[in-house]
Image 1 (cartoon, rainbow, N blue to C red):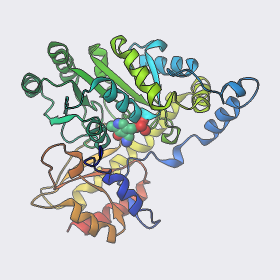
Image 2 (image 1 turned 90 degrees about the vertical axis):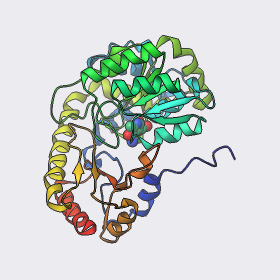
Image 3 (image 1 turned 135 degrees about the vertical axis):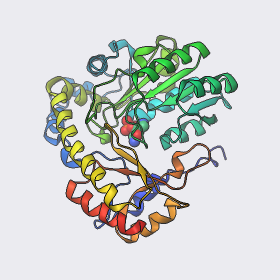
Image 4 (image 1 turned 180 degrees about the horizontal axis):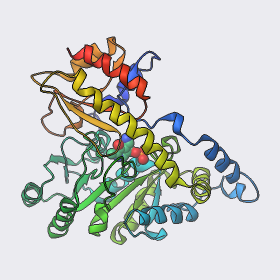
Amino acid sequence: MRLADVASSPVRDLLALIDRPEVISFAGGLPAPELFDVDGWRAAFQAALSGPAARRHLQYAPTEGDPRLRECLAARTSGRGLPTRAADVLVTTGSQQGLTLVAAALLEPGATVVVDEPTYLAALQCFGMAGARIVSSPTDPEALAEVFARERPALLYLVPTFANPTGRTLDRARRAAIAELAERFGVWVVEDDPYGELRYRGDHLAPLASYSNRVVYLGSLSKIGAPGLRLGWVRTPPELRAALVVAKQAADLHTSTIDQAAAAHYLSVTDLDAHVRGLCGAYRARRDTMLGLLPQVMPGGTGWSDPDGGMFVWVRLPGAVDTAELLAVALRADVAFVPGAPFFAGEPDRATLRLSFTSCTPEQITEGMRRIGRAVL
Ligand code: PMP
């Protein structure tokens, strides 16, 4: 069977197990539901289903996406330091579909994809399903140059800003160096950026794609709007545009017309920057609560990331611990996290785990971290 070797997502399997109200979960990378702008989205869907345009919004539509939404997404991407025209935008069903389309358009079976380690699990699945060979590499320019020269990869996949699962961000110098290497070796780079707007300290960094046309940028409304909308976009380099549109057409003809129309309305009438500032305020407090408690509850010798934004803290326990076994203990104490091993393309570091701080209140984080502390002792 073609997909026999592709593992199901342990994160999804886990989410099924922890669906008990008493469990405090730091497992899923979920936005806080109480911060969704339910009223704004209700009004947007109401508007999209009112008047003569309602019938058009229930009809088939162009593969590239709703023209008004493409304008809004291009303006938002440009505002983040990556000049983008509406014609550059391909609307996708979540940025996850952007990954699938890029894999379909760029990867011959057996092609090599280079990834950072650890990296986003569902990207590993997506490249695995495309029949790619995945090679992990550190992201410093010397290591990447050596891997590019040796492996001749088709593609480099990165989450340069507030990565999943580590929370790490590549600085300007590294972005520039990676862009230069991509051009020198003729490698396409995928910049997956669902978290870039969730910054809690420090200065905004222009996307890696602003340094080179060899970078395909993937954006998402999941973390700044709502993930249930399943709306993302690819900023398509002109050379790849036709192939990506064909891949999109073959996948699902186009993303939901009504959802796109509602999003176009929402983005034209809402101060999304103000909404994102509200999210950042709440998430910053949650991150600080979690980081403040880690030294109290974790054994000496534990290390963790100190992310400037995003949703995740990456933890490494001392000694020969297997966090998959620890998870069973934690679940008995009604707290959940994700073991780190599945995020590795190569040999996993089993003493690692990922904690998400966004979907619990500071009070829940305080109680959940106490429970984790009891589980790891
Ligand atoms: N890329 C990364 C790095 C992610 O963490 C996620 C969501 N967890 C996605 C892509 C998919 O996001 P979307 O909801 O836009 O499909």
